[in-house]
Image (cartoon, rainbow, N blue to C red):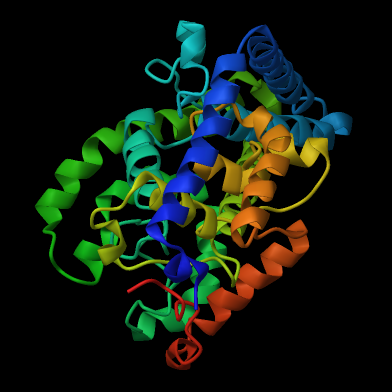
Length: 361
């Protein structure tokens, strides 16, 4: 039985107060150190992008160009874009780092991402039917999702999702499954909804696959292929980080009923049990946008992510005090656990050993 069902209202209240205290203490401590960190990171990301785009035009250094541009895109999307658009640096009142103004180097519009990710995913984390990130409408990622024949392709669909992740995220709010599978959306509705998304997608495609190759003149093919490689590297890494944060086998999922009269303390516990961390060095944490501390991110999504490593021991201490599990492991371990779930749930028998057996009623 999940610890969620064993906790008393008083314990939920106490846990909520403990996590609120951590959050308030960090908020009170925000200052120059945090501003220097994010501004320094933006400078390094821009240098990597310039270096990458130049090196792509120098054949002997082409692999270095791909590596630099890949790192630039990963930093832009993960530690900078994701976290800035969460509002983690809004307190600086710097328009370049404010969630209202920031845009990133990916196909998804900032407006759509903040709706599907910041609001839907972070409010309804791992609630089946409310959190579209559970399978993105493409995969069966919960034993409580009724099995359909298309889920036999869970594994190849997951590979495709990794390869083209920025584009799937860009069109996530369309809920394509409503048109393609469940027929609850018309083609006309789909086209109208897609129009503003296509504007951003077309801008990204033109920049990477037309503008920069043309600027490279005779080196256009090298630049074109380099951009393909850098986008693939960013897509696969970003998708793997996100999957490792929510889909290892022991991560819990919830029915919609859990949202009824949910208290602050219950929200904290749902975020905790619905997330997972992975271990690694400083570079791993930065390149993951510190989503290697997915638990801390879901507890405190508006705190600067570089603080999560400092907060983690306090979160672990609260977990030990109340007997709450703290799901963490190596990147490889979380990846293998995630793919085990993907494979198991591709089969109708995948529901026989439901991972949701401990879900609160």
